[in-house]
Amino acid sequence: MSADRASKKGLVLAVNAGSSSLKVSLFRLAEAFIQGTDLKAGTQPVELILTYSITNITAPPAKESLSFASDSSQKPIKGQEVEGVKDHSSAFERFLKSVQDRGIKQDDIVHVCHRVVHGGDYHEAVVISDKTYEHIEKLTDLAPLHNGSALSVIEACIKQLRNANSIAYFDSSFHRTMPQHICSYAINPKIAKERGLKKYGFHGLSYAFILRSVAQFLGKEESQTNIIAVHLGSGASAVAIKDGKSLDTSMGLTPLSGLPGATRAGMVDPSLIFHYTNKVGRMSHKKEHQAGVGVTEAEEILNTQSGWKALTGTTNFAEITSSDSPEHRLAFDLFVDKILDFIGSYYVKLGGNVDALVFAGGIGEKSKDLREAVAKGVECLGFKVDDAKNGKVGEGDEDEIVVDIGVANKGQPKRVLMCRTDEQLEMARECALTEKFWE
Image (cartoon, rainbow, N blue to C red; front, side, top):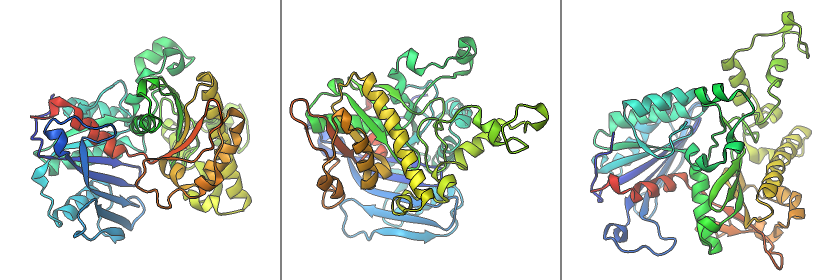
């Protein structure tokens, strides 16, 4: 199914459904882009109209925030409690009501871009049809915290915005360039192929944005840029990008593998879950002691009952960094250690030819303590953080997409950067640049 071509005067909505949150950005196509004027380097083909977010969807009361990019007459909303929001579908309906009350007409929205974490073997964005919807639905078991949420918002969009095309953009697409020996598992290849059991990788929309932004910051072509980037948030991952392409990434078949997160265990011994659920509460291979744990229970434990929530009782990483308790210190040190594992591995895979180490994601952007700890761990590789620059991130540089926080060595400098990634902008940009979507 192909999308109906839309007027370039129409609006583009970019929707990012998290496990318990919904982030939405509304864009218009830039006038210079509409007129066919060559865009200067770094100029976007879209312009932001507003951003909206709603949090605590699964732990009421939900809270909404809304801000307009350039219309000062519109009063912003920040962390306002809302009633009646119990799932992602009702959260999206709340968004539509909020913007409609402020003069945004639903009929002006012509394309809705949906971030979908797991796309399986889809390598490009697809217009939502019965067939593509069914394919995404089948992949929900591989991304249980995200694909289901995205599908519920897609359903709400199709119902509420009948004149708009819903288009899925997949996090896994960015990593399609990984070599076979990196994305394969050492299991029966026939079964692996039949069932699609391989490393897919995620956070791809974020990494596409980071790559382009960092390459521009460094004055290099994307195809000549080598970086190690870490997207650190409640879900966290790392990537090695060689010559502008994903070489390796920490997440695998599902987003569970790799780095630990707010509620995810990250990489563990595959046998751990069976010992964890053993009936006698200790390691045993006796059949009578086996719990017979199923896939659903195992994924529930490793996806939602682990991570630093299990270690500390909180999913708020700011609380962890501000506490000296043994539990919080353990969670912090463990997270840093796992990040170092991947940075060191990727440095070797890139043969030491790394232009920059890049921090991104909510924690990567906001936690100076984590950036400092990680950077100290990789000083031996030539990366070094400037303590003053690192401590001032967020103080007057909010309009900067990439911020240099490093100390460049003489000879072959290896930069340490922070990037304010924007998955919604990445989707809207890709949508604007896809000619088949427009009249």
